[in-house]
Amino acid sequence: MSLQASGAVSPAAPSPADPLAQTPLHALHLRLGAKMVPFAGYAMPLHYAAGLLKEHLHTRAAAGFFDVSHMGQIALTTRSGDVAEAAGALEKLVPIDILGLEDGRQRYGFLTDAAGGILDDLMVARLPDRLHVVVNAANKTADLARIQAHLPDGVAATLVPDALIALQGPKAADVLARLAPAVAAMRFMDVRTIDLLGTPCLVSRSGYTGEDGFEIAVPAERAEAVAEALLAAPEVMPVGLGARDSLRLEAGLPLHGSDIDAGTSPVEASLAWAISPARRRGGAREGGFPGADRILAEMKAGPGRRRVGLRPEGRAPVRADAPLFSAEAGGEAVGRVTSGGFGPSLGAPVAMGTLPSVLASPGTRVFAEVRGQRLPLVVSPLPFVPAGFKRG
Amino acid sequence: MLRFTDEHEWLRLDGEVATVGITAHAAEQLGDLVFVELPKVGARLTKGEAAAVVESVKAASDVYAPLSGEVTEVNEAALSDPASVGADPQGAGWLYRLKLDDVSAMDALMDEAAYAAFAK
Image (cartoon, rainbow over all chains, first blue to last red; front, top):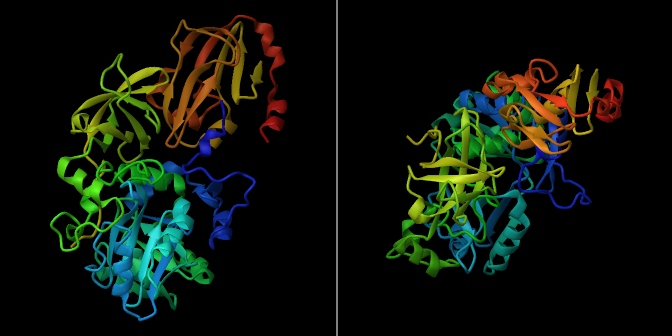
């Protein structure tokens, strides 16, 4: 067998000739015995000693520690000090309501292009003196350039060099509250500047695993101390990119570059829910973002194809790029699996893919071609596992 | 006689039937296995063709036929409990048995010491 593919996580790194960047927690990963792999130009932990399966299940049962410092963090600041100027500028690039975002709150969104495709998905937090935007690692250089190119005089966008730590799982709040009691009162998508070990850190109650949890931006030189303090909690296990991918897949969360990309509109991506009412037809600031004509028309008329959840009926995982068919034999491919694997919490294979809207209703049976055979799958609602967010 | 291939399979010969599995080194690299697909009893395998599949959470890996022959038995326990392959890959986690066309072809494969050096 080939052992080359066993460490694969998309997106692939650039050519091996490029030296890999290291996060501020690189030495810690090595001490923890991580298997390091190239990911989006960084050396990143694929898994630690426990292995992907245990890391995944532990995150759902207790708390997982993730280094996501490879992701891009962009600060938008203004010369005047008025954050609304930055919010108004960024609204020209995303179909979400940032002017209406309250101080200390965060919202999910995406950068769209003129054709209505998704250049990247992101989180925007509004703070008293700035916007804090978190984007995907593989796109951060392009995202920063795009944002900078569209900013008016007086608004600046810069990469924030902080480490980014995610603490995810039902015990995450207990663990973090022992370091900073204030986090206990935070709700899903709240953002606060909070002292951890005497260092101000930007803490948001969010993540990408479907669990309650936090993402914590820590100054690079303090990242290891904060990481060690979190890992010292008995509830916490370090978790690599492998389980991060299976957790987000079970949670029905799309991965840019796999499930969504510039060839996918937000409506096709089943992400129309994230388009704020203020930016929709009839909203206070209708349109005014790249691709608005297409996206708003598609919201009204319905898309021709959609991102859906898929549950294989058998035990065999159905993986990315498997073609999808409407029948067990014959016919042309009607869609494609975009992410797929085994869901450890479900004990069964799970996948996401794109299907024509007429085949996208839950309960519809389709077939994926795997090793020359057509395997049945059922279109299923997302997420596959119930979300554990603290909304109250 | 125990032999290994450079594709990380092992064969243990008993008469003219070889038991085939994946090596401990391969199992460690693959991580927790969640799905196993095996050839059908009676299937003819040609050396180098994809004969079985082992899948971890992340990835599917083909297991190639290490030599040519006919499948005489498959490990049903591996199908129902894929984790058993990873737990004891060179014992209870064997995959299938192959009646070799040419037993002498075993001689061209690596012995344990040669494989250990190869897999380093």
